[in-house]
Amino acid sequence: MQVLIINQPLCNRGDESAHRALVRSIIKAKPDVRITVLFDTYTEEQIDAFQVMSPQVEYVLIRIPRPYSILNRIYHKLRNLVLRKSYMRWTWFVEPTLRKIRYYYVNADLVLNAPGGICMGGFQNWHHIEGLRIAKLFKRPIIYYGRSFGPFPTETESNRLFKQYSLEMLRYFSFLSIRDKKTEHLAIELGIPYESTLDSAFLEQPYVEIPKEVKELIAGKPYMVFVPNILIWHYAYKDKLTKQQIISFYSEMAEIMLQAHNECNIIMLPQTFMFGDYENDDVCLFHDIAKNMNNERIIVLPDTYSSDLQQTLISDATLLVGARYHSIVFAINNNVPFVALSYEHKIEGLLEALDKKDCMIDISSVSTEQGRSEINKSVKYLLPLISKDEKATKKAKAVAMNCFSKFVSRFLTE
Image (tube, rainbow, N blue to C red; front, top):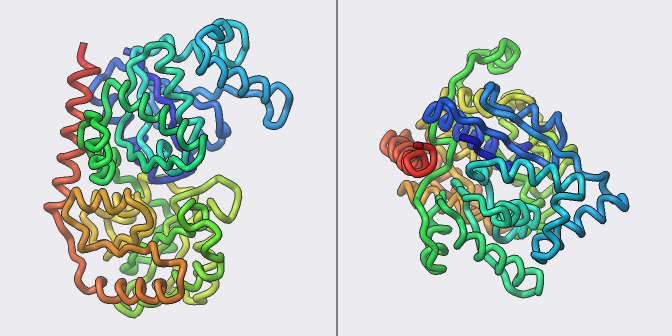
């Protein structure tokens, strides 16, 4: 069986963990499967940092014409036209890049949209929708696995068209699994059938050897894990916060953590990497927080270490405070006490499904000074109350595995 994975987000350790867990689980369930992971964005270096090393998995980068070139404009115009106009389908056999893309779609037994974030919703990711519509064009069965979606704004013509295409795809999917309760409520409202799941990272609990240089940084001392989120990249917070406000906010939070557990250091684990700019590479913010605090108990781990190593480190942590969705997934997956800093509905939806909203603080008020102060007060209040919860960990793994088993029985069993 040939499986084509599309729309795989990169440069994020959380998305990496979901990808690796799902791919390794598919290989385990179907030893003769062949998986192609197709990209027409990103770089070879970014793809290499993400790979599952297996002879059954191939990562393919189709190079589109150079950005801002005439050929690039022609390519994107043709791509859009052939997705809207049936009489343009001959272009798939003529234009070189489209011909390469067509080859992988038509030779796939099924197309699996990689688990990840909310590309079909507020972020309005047109490239994401286009990849799905190509699969529909070639009549491929589509598995939309472990995603959140929505909300769908309708203020502009672009909004309305994006919503139209999104609903068309949601009703076309052969298998739709949703990873959070908020999105499930929307699916029910829209009358779209789905399977409940949780993040694909819950399909496994990786453990790897800790490198010598990381052991030296930890120095055998107990530690907490802290994973801030700069937020200024997000459409809901953009232009409402300054970089310095964010640095001060998280510095105060880290100080609260150190005071609550004076025997522990703080390890900061960057989730996003290889974007090449301050707004998107976590390690830049983390170093500024550490510099602002000037405290040797703050340790910023380089962003070159895999999600497997991050989960291994988190499994030995005293607790975790995280404003990144997958940092909370990692804590739950390894039964580590946590405080979740929820900035959008995917964290809230996850915790609602596990009856763990008592460990969550809504940080949507972070753009005001009073809001930041109240959030830090809530962190100070919650830290002594959080504890391990094996029941939540078992439930998360069971829900994820139940959905995966349904997918396997329907589509991977010949």
